[in-house]
Length: 103
Image (cartoon, rainbow, N blue to C red; front, side, top):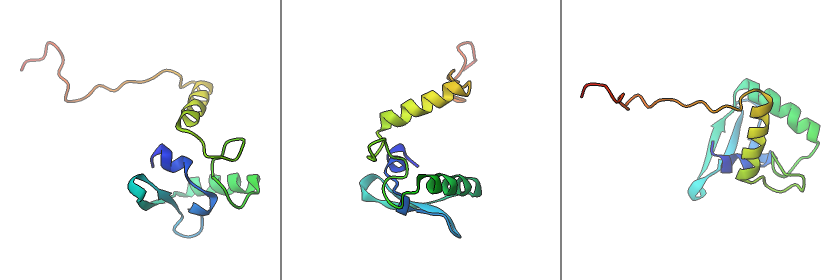
């Protein structure tokens, strides 16, 4: 799911019953269904119940508007730092050769 699809989710787009899924409104006005696993469903049930709101964005700002991509990035950075994940990890491209590798 893209960040823009996540921030655009409304409470009514999330279906937590049998065959739980989220209806995403993506690029090019395409709609698609993203399945939700049991853990995600359990967390979302509690999250939605605690908010006691029946409509609006699933992850709103303080003023109940849609979160921006920058707000999501800032929130992720905050929680990554709190969890000890502040260091970026880089993966080497398996196709990239070492400088001394034979060609």
